Amino acid sequence: MVKIGNVELGEFPLLLAPMEDVSDPPFRALCKQEGADVLYTEFISVEGLIRDATKSVQKLDIYDYERPIGIQIFGAELDSMQRAAAIVEEAQPEILDINFGCPVKKVVCKMAGAGILQDIPRMVKLTEAIVKSTNLPVTVKTRLGWDDKTIFIQEVAERLQDVGIKALSIHGRTRKQMYKGEADWTEIGKIKENPRIHIPIFGNGDINSPEKALEYKNRYGVDGIMIGRASIGNPWIFREIKHYLKTGELLPPPTLAERVAATKQHLLHSLEWKGERTGIVEMRRHYTNYFKGLRGIKHYRSKLVTSMEVDYIFEVLDEIEQVYAEGNVPIEIKNSVLV
Image (cartoon, rainbow, N blue to C red; front, top):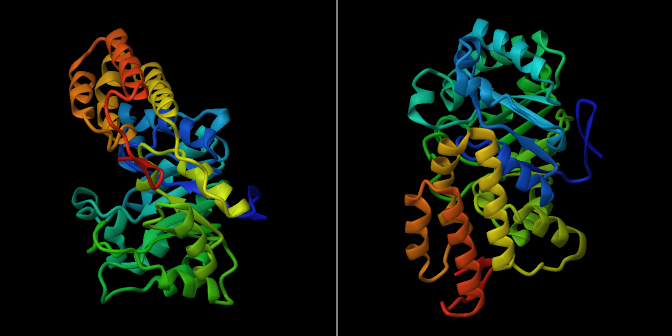
């Protein structure tokens, strides 16, 4: 049984990665339904929290059906990080996660996110201070290093464990790589082989199929896998991986009806959580992902992303299901994706 502190996660947990503008409550609900064992919020600015900024505070919203859930914060200043940790504790998640991995320039330039990989002692100091300031189990998500000349993740893992973190998630790229190239899990595997390491180590990066999940589980010995981009528009990846790990069999891909139903659920929850206008506008980024690869979908996508009428959007979704189900637009099913 894998645990983060006293939080039991199962034998080989699958974690939904924290993703800005993606892993909000509407999307998290779908991933939970489809088998994600642990959910993480979008990353939250500690400066936004301590200033009581509406957008930052809203990201603290969590629901009982999501548990266990981790709230992820990012920042660079010790006092702000500690004050934000106290605010997070009031929201009562199971886990407090620190983002030391975001590669985005506007975060990195403030020495937050992956920026702190340029100053490992500061990274350790901030982590230790947060561990001491909260009763929640603290975890960290980070990358291999700043660039290929500064891959110090072996040292980082030991030092963060020594100051009290309860789990470590590692994205198999450097900050310089951003999301380019192939994620390298070799260093992650070495950490698992280190006899000093006793906290759970979760691998992250490029897990986009059940077969790859099993291969990396066996090859690198990780305690679980964190899935990010591969879940966007495809929350079914969690159930597909779990089924494959248990049976060695691939599930059939989600049907068009399932894709339409998920889109409707996502939209409804977005309307409820964000309000009608924001819910409609922010849902637009997801339509391409849910219907990725359907021939002729651009015609319907144009309707979905230009309308502000809820009823009309649902009519278009119904039309998509009907037209494609009747075979009026050709579909080829390949590798669990509609193409």
